[in-house]
Image (tube, rainbow, N blue to C red; front, side, top):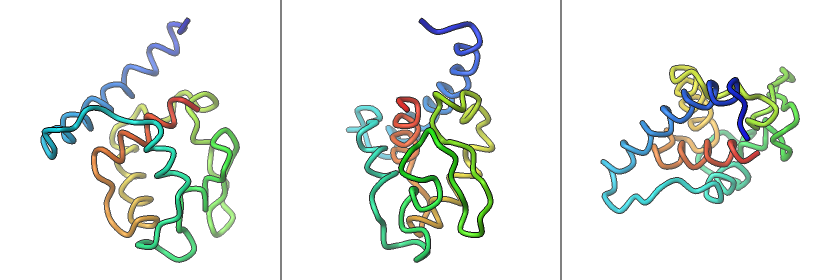
Length: 126
């Protein structure tokens, strides 16, 4: 059962996901919802379009989403899993800022709304 504090933190994240769902549906009428499995693949797979030192999200965030990560220059990154960082992904502007920066570094382009929603769906299961 979710506590009142957890529910309050989930509401903004749900709003962010709803926005991505609307954008994904507008881009593809066949959009049927987000997939944590696709989000996990996006997070763990190696990509060739971005920077050579960051071919995957795990390059900085690590394999364990519940553990702290590290940037290429050694700066600590808080865990990305919602279970250990419940206030993450509750500020839409911050979420967009980090998606814009990290997607460009890893993929060499902006993430699609579906990719963003899939990745967030994965993080909410972690």
